Image (cartoon, rainbow, N blue to C red; front, side):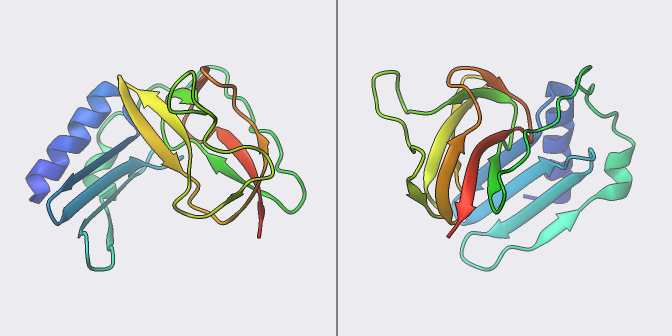
Length: 160
């Protein structure tokens, strides 16, 4: 994938209000994400070697940012000594893979970086969200079946 194709992906994301895009094709992986300040962060790497991050500040700065929510809410404070797993995208939060299945994780359960903790549905696509941290789930902060915003805390985790 060349720079022109990556810019086209960013343009499509901007027009559709997406904050994150990931593509894996063979041994190539591309991840484009909009940071909390609206800046774009992109990394394109072969799957086997170590990833290298690339930022495109100048060309992307000219792209108009998506409209910010009118009433931003402050995330709940993390419990002393704990961290949070936050939503990487806008969508609908689900604790389990289906309505009749058990939740991916429960308070008191140990998780590691690769543990799937929930699903966020965005544009009819079910996205598995991994903990990306090691610890014990202290509290579920999002409501099952309810919308979540980018950066909204989903779980409180006590490091192990």
